[in-house]
Amino acid sequence: MTIDLTPDAATDSTTPSRAPAGTTDPALRSWVADLAALTQPDDIVWCDGSLREADLLTKQLVADGKLIRLNPEWRPNSYLARTDPGDVARVEDRTFICSTYEEDAGPTNNWRDPREMREELRDVFAGSMKGRTMYVVPFSMGPLGGPISQLGVEITDSPYVVLSMGIMTRMGERVYRLIEAGEPWVRTVHSVGYPLRDERGFMRDDADWPCNDTKYIVQFPDSREIWSFGSGYGGNALLAKKCFALRIASVMGRDEGWLAEHMLLIKITSPEGKAYHVAAAFPSACGKTNLAMLRPTIPGWTVETIGDDIAWMRPGADGRLYAINPEAGFFGVAPGTGASTNPTAVQTLWGNTIFTNVALRPDGDVWWEGLTDVPPAELTDWEGNPWTPASGRPAAHPNSRFTVAAAQCPSIADDWDAHDGVPIDAILFGGRRATNVPLVAEARSWKHGVFMGATISSEQTAAAEGTVGELRRDPFAMLPFCGYNMADYWAHWVRMGRTLGEQAPKVFQVNWFRKDADGRFLWPGFGENARVLEWIVGRIEGHADAVEAPIGLLPAPGSLDLDGLDIAQEALDQLFDVDRTSWLAECDLTEDYFDQFGDRVPAALRAELASLRYHLERAS
Ligand code: GTP
Ligand code: SPV
Ligand code: MN
Image (cartoon, rainbow, N blue to C red; front, side, top):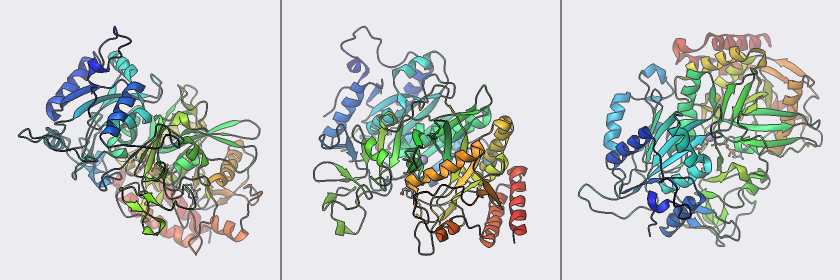
């Protein structure tokens, strides 16, 4: 079944005088025309972001067997998508930064010559949409017209991507009007790379999840352009997210004096009723969504959600740092999301949600590892095969995800879409570290905080293709997302500290993942992390005590609120233990790591490393 979504048919019949769908903007029209000439779709649909449009697309995907409608009694207006088993996560080795000069991409990015890559992409995209519909998706990152917001357009041949973009961004017609008024916008192009007609014009059947073995996720930072081919999944295909809001936006931020970060945003309210805003960078699948939706276990405190993945931050007129969540939805990791770990997320997912690669229950609802303690007796796994608890494999893919509107989250803050953003009081850096890194430490200065961010290491998760569990450096949780030379990015952070001066937020390092010798987590985590937030607020207010340690300021004995928490003194000692030998060994690794970037490493970070060694050696 196909539903006619051509511009004329999509015009709402109740308002016949409305202008035809799409835009009058000549630059946007000619860009779309050029891409249509290259990719040769059968149809072009100018999306308007209406509910009607989403409804028609959903119906078409269900009719084509590409989305499974969940039982509306349990999960109204919700759907399950199953991807190709080879298209389940970001592909970092096929992600390219095509800056003019290789040094500007730096040693942590795959650089390709922009001219050569353009030529290669012309071949790759030639005819890639044959037999399909090309959708033009206009979107705003951040509130429309806001001072920190940006516009973009994604061209895609995936209706799943259109629906997801409708949840994840402010997508719709009003963006065309802003573009027509002369607002700048970012060009992003996406094809699943599975044309339905070959060179001779023969049609083939569509795949259940069309994609291509050869993938390209290409950023051209100098011209602010994105080209993505071969994948329909997450950060590979929702180009507003990692490709634009991090890789391209980080370059915009470097050039214009702001920050685009892989950070959650929360509003914390103390028992006294005072509000604080905190941004926190953790690598992929390391607990940003959990902290963003935290339910404090300590009385009187509330945490409200602003964002769970990306923050754009810019100095405001008063000299403070202001942040927005540029997204409008959550693309969250499903496994491990349950009543005990993240009840708020579970509630958010009551309906209007697209689930991807989770398991299906016989009653037409969804399930994943960690949703309930006891798995259902039988399921259909994420690949569509029968599953029982005895199957010996996960029912949901470890990187299975939900896509849901932020506004549907019961803990969403009233200022989550504030036009001018929210003032940031503290920045946290964290990773998944079984050893070494204490539960919380405060940076001695902004520069020390930048050093903490630059030296984040974390055990690799399932969010990207690779070896899960392997410890890797992930500076600022931006390793796969920084659109330019990582050392220049550190220098940009050092510069931002100078701009902010006395008004710079305090910086902290946190680690919920430290383990004992038997491999058990030392800290209960989740809602109990509110105790750490309380100490951080205490430091901002100047009433919580800290003690000097070589690696930063640790909570003074008794200053971390442990009331009502059953935790052994021995566990606490281990949580805050700073082992000189292993820290000195880590300093050597940090030096090697910095050396890759040569003289682009800011002197301030070399000085912080020297200072850390000095403090560690003196501590003997
Ligand atoms: P991306 O969306 O990939 O950027 O990741 P994210 O940082 O939002 O990941 P998410 O919040 O979904 O991370 C979930 C993982 O972190 C699950 O495995 C959780 O169990 C784990 N996690 C979150 N908070 C805690 C905690 O306080 N303690 C422990 N032990 N695990 C936690
Ligand atoms: C991440 O990997 O950090 C994500 C998921 O947030 S994706 O959008 O697929 O990159
Ligand atoms: Mn992320």
